[in-house]
Length: 227
Image 1: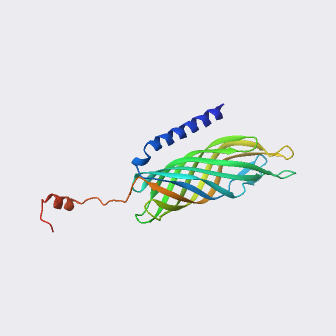
Image 2: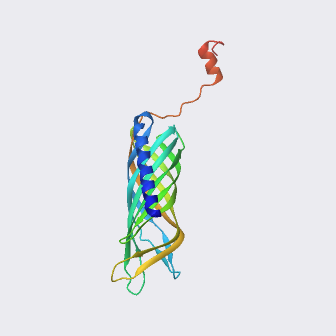
Image 3: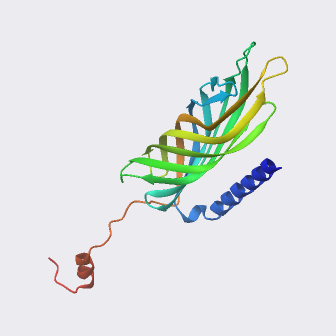
């Protein structure tokens, strides 16, 4: 019941957030696009103390940045991986799973040219689904990269991320009727991800405008002679 309440609350909150954002899409600068990459790492220890590491595999999703200053944005991220964890036991087979990250946070860019490095930090939840069980966990994502603007409305970006999923307990998943089941326990499931994205930019330019100096203001008003 607790997990069902959490899932329902989280999904409704995300939907409400997207609706709120959609109402102001054309009012603020916004960038949105699909992404693809490679996710690796992620180690559990079972109840016997044996370590199991998820198989590296491809990932895909989407990213959206909503700018509230010329170089700062609210970022929304979705990333999915389909992979497997070796189950061990007398008849080792793989436990297949799907792991989704739903994140929201902040992004800070540096520089004003067509190449803009950035750092990002996001919070949210992760949904892990196996053949016979699904669970939701609090998670966070830390990352950085760079954006490359091909035109004012089209660009590409590269990202290097660290996903941290806080399990704070034990999860169990069956790998099939003929193979053994595997139970994992631990506090943090950490993965790295390298990805790239193509994005479209909306809402007009967001170049950093230099603030007028006092001497410029005086000259505009004609209060002092032009130098």
